[in-house]
Image (cartoon, rainbow, N blue to C red):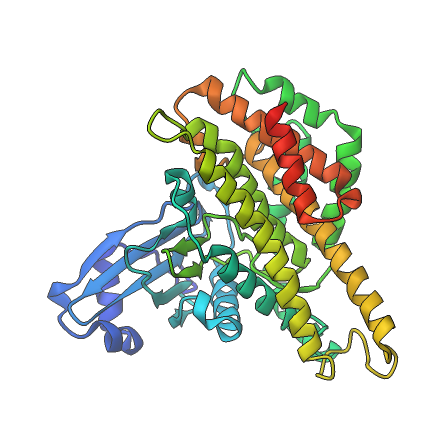
Length: 420
C-alpha cells in the first residue's frame, strides 16, 4: 500500500472495499457472495470493473499511476480521477440525459463508482465498425455539447465564477500535456511512440513531418488548446467515449477534462466520424457494400454541427440577459450588433472544430494511439488505402478551414477525397 493510502484493487480486494462503502452497499445490497465482478478496462489508463448484484449494478473505475498499455515506464498522475469525477458531476448536472450518474468518489483511492450502462449499450466506435445506424445520435450529442459548452462559458458565467472553475481544472495539467504531446507534437517529428501502417504509409508519415504549412497551422491550434479557457470541455470526445443504443447516447471517460477551446470537443467527435467514414470500404463485403451506411455517416456529421449550431444559439438567445459577462447587454444593445457578434463567434468556433478535428484525425494515423475502425481491417494494403484517404482529407481540412463556409462543404470535401 502506498504511503498516500492508494492501493490498486483486484477483484478480491474490491469486494472488501464495497462492503466498507455505504454508498455502494446502498445500490448493490448486502448479498456479497452473489456479486459478479468482471474487469473490462480496454482503455489505456485505468482498471474498470462491472459489478452486478441481485439488487443493482455499478461500474467501478480506478485510475492507475501509469499508462496501463505501456506500463510503469510511462507514469501518470492518478489524481486525474478527481477531474473525471468532478467533470462527470458537472456535465451530468447540465445534460443529465447523456451522462451517467456518479454514486461514489474516493479521492485517496482514485476510484469512481457510477451507473452501469447495461446492454444493449455498446461503445459507439464498435457500432460504427459493425455498420449500425443510430437515428438519434446527432440529436443527442448536439444537445450534450450545446449545454455543457454554453453553460460553462462566459456566455453564461460571470468572469469570477469562470476564473474559479478554470483554476480548479488547471490541476489536470498532466493529461493536458499528454494531449499536447500526442496530438500537436509527436505526429510532426520523429518519435519513438509514433507508428503507421508500414511500409505502406512510411512516405505519408514522412510527408507530414516535412509539411511546413501543416506545422504552422498546428502551432496555432496548440496555442489555442493551451491558452484558451473557453469552456469545460470533455477533452477526449471521440467515438470510443460514447456508449449508445438506438435511443440512448451516454458520454463517458472525461478524465482529460479541463477549461479549453470548445472546438476541441466538437472536432474530436466529428473528426472521428470522418475516420469511421473512410474506414467503411475496409469493412465492406459481398453481403454489404456499406454505401448506404456511408451516406448515413455523412448525414450524421451534417446534422451534428447544424443541430449544435441551432441549439447553442438558442441557449444564447434564451440567456442573453443572464449572468454571462462576455457580451454585456448595455454594450451589445441592438439586434444588428448582437447578430454580428454571434456570426463572428460561430464562424471561429466552426474553424476551430475543423482544425482540431483534422489534427485528431492525423494523430490517429501517424501517431501513437490508432483507432479500431482502421486497425480491425485485416487486409493491410486496404487498411493503408483507407488511412491514406483519411489523412489526405484531414490535411485539406486543416489547411483550408478558414475558407470552408458550411458543414455541407466539409461533406463535399470528404466525398471528393474518396473519389480521387
